[in-house]
Image (cartoon, rainbow, N blue to C red; front, side, top):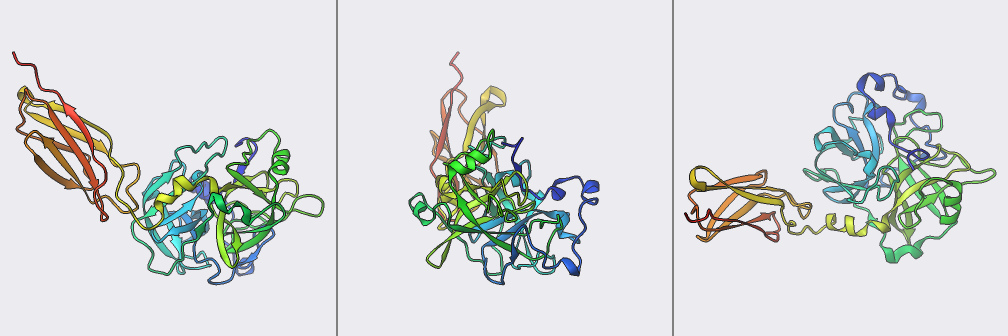
Length: 374
């Protein structure tokens, strides 16, 4: 899909610094309310779940050189975005900003990232499962309202022809970056119509959904660069429901090619663990142990953190060694432990359990053989 489908990351934000400086300049007063492709300014308080993903060291003084993507709060300490927005990025490389419809350093709160979790089935070449959940070090101090996620049982909330809404700070139809959050509505397209328009691309109706005002007299309504990962919503009565995440399209506002969104109902199993309330961590990964020192009288244990920490940081690990019922407690950043004074001939079974503020997760064990008796 990547050969045909343009993911709508703010490309100027991903270029090296020297190239980014050659990109579009920040908007002056005359551009403060310019529209995204076919959209208009969003009202204050309309989107209390909306956030932006920015490059940490480029957001000030020019936020438009740092903007990468949109994101949505799904819990007080977690946001959802597109996987291609965070491809190859570390937690320290990015910030989440929230708290204002104006994407200006003086108006928003910047939040440090704790973990970036990409869907294990994400394929950057086909666009499948293009989703990531970002866990924050701390929730924002400004009020946010996490958005409700669509479930597989809610598919009846929309059908082809129904309007859906998307928001973002991405470029407008002139390619100029904007400071104020923009909104637009576009009709949902039937899967077969979208598939026919993207002949040769990998459109998957089970994991993707299309929206756009296509055909004669249509177009000029779509997300654009910088809007990737942002929300596509419909109403359940008066309650907004998140049904999609901006994935990409052929061109911004092209009347023949609708925008493609990752379908949230296909992501339930991956996303639900990050919703409140928090739970205990999963098992530690890659647990191993080996003897060290003269005659193997010490054992070194190593592990990797759980794939999912339960939504709350792991604050310590409990390590047990049997026989002997020996217990050790190490901090949440620990990845190894040396156990001294063990029998060189008897097998030793070691268990490691991760614990967060909710409690202890399931244990993982490994057994180290004893040396043979001469």
